[in-house]
Image 1 (tube, rainbow, N blue to C red):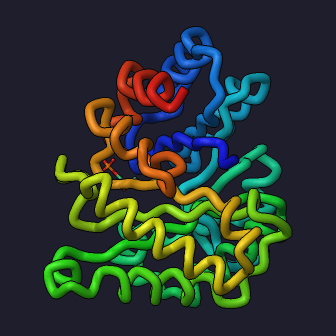
Image 2: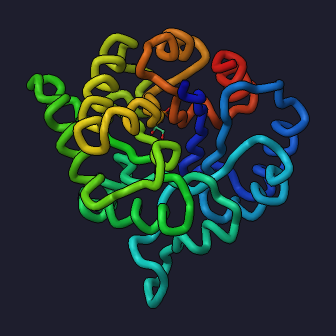
Length: 250
Ligand SMILES: O=C[C@H](O)COP(=O)(O)O
């Protein structure tokens, strides 16, 4: 019912010339896919992604977007620019943005609205820090973040919204959440989406897991009923491991 999405968040890695070679190899080696693949590079690589991927089934997108439509906002990138570059997705509210750029739930909601106005699907990230999990407050924290980041956000349909649950303590640590813990949180997220948008809508929203996904743990994570794919950092940088994830996703 929900098409699996494997999205590679390259963060601040690669340069356009390296990306061109990598993306051309991906295009050459891409297996037939039921699942959906997406590459989310840094902004300067997006024109290369458009050039190489636009004739393929691989989507691409951005890692952030301005909360403004346009104007004197030095260094920011608008949803309209991302649309012009052919982006299908954009991450909003990644924990690294919330941490290093002090992004609030209200700001994340504004960013999601700008994307939806341009027909780009937000990948909205939520997830708890270790100390919150250790206090047994992970679900309350994550759901508060989710609903705060969805304030006033009204996607046209469930295919226009993707949620990524990324426990902060699992990002870049090699320590992923267990499939059972991921499933418990994804179930809670889907219930909260159901209360916010209705059950039919919520049942079709894809909820990705992110946090040290790799070819060794991905099949077990995907076997959970409410895990609809992965938002992958490190394991998306090497072509072989990204292709392995796509093969596992089917
Ligand atoms: O957006 C991706 C997440 O931050 C996970 O990164 P990671 O797979 O390197 O842990």
